[in-house]
Image 1: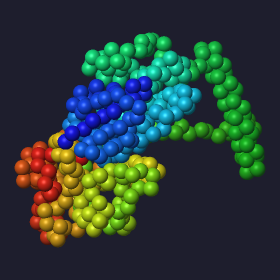
Image 2: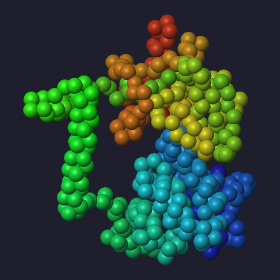
Image 3: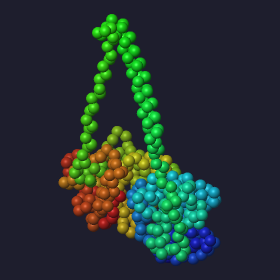
Image 4: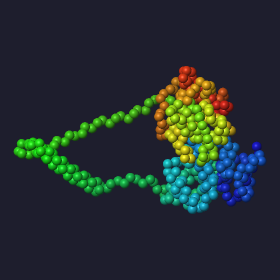
Length: 417
């Protein structure tokens, strides 16, 4: 398949960087407008060009390791190639100091916990704005920029085209420490507390005296008895729940789902919004980045496997309550939905398990525990397109008690995510 990429000489730095980083074999020339020609077809949108280059380089992980990451990559990539690269200087600087700095305050990379093509593209666009990077106004963006220039530029010997920007991380302010009261302040606080306690004690004593007087009670010597204060008994702290040796795969809630309806996401061309019955009172809304791989009519009225206990995530304004599982070819040429070998023998909500590793799944996976991140690399298909966890098949517990295997249409030895 012949392909030629025309790159404007004085712009599109992010496309140049993507080509060099991927060591793209696509023939490149310089010209007036950005244009990719593939077997006579012309592609002029940066987003599509970037995805084509990634696919040709056979690095699908740069587009996300699962449906959720792929959707986030699409969202950030659209923002970068459609808005950021065409924005004025003031607007770009505003994004550096606000949008990016805020996002990167809780993220090492723009998507997931690994490098994606989003980091490369945004770095390529921002490289000409290094004079606007200041530790006082965008410390998080600055840390990210320094990380990417070492991972992408320095590690791949691209410094001639993209000179390194000297970053003094000693000048990057650390998060503000909590205010600690001074010793004098603490002493005064204790005095004030004692005064308040004495005042309150006098008030309580007066109330007790009035009450006792009304009841005609007196102590020896005519003094009214003081109310004896009971000390609250300290209850022993409940012990923290112990971490069990339950198999990790059993903590993942994978169920059979039935896609009742499917439609295009109104705010993202690459996303579908599905209503999937997973055996609950109401179907779940799930967003998937499968527009490229399936037409709507092939999505609807079919059985799939659904990861049900992920933390809900918003996808371009639509909250997704799970993820459909797919197998991806190693070369990125195909993505296929997982389903039961015999759909006629299953029903929505049937649990998926691994023999000898059963257990009760978590209600919601704790992101800090990294359960899904531990399980996912072990999920794959074999030469017969059967879904495996390690060397054991994924099985469906059917109503009849029969253990049903899961498979895809044609992807052999592909990763599942």
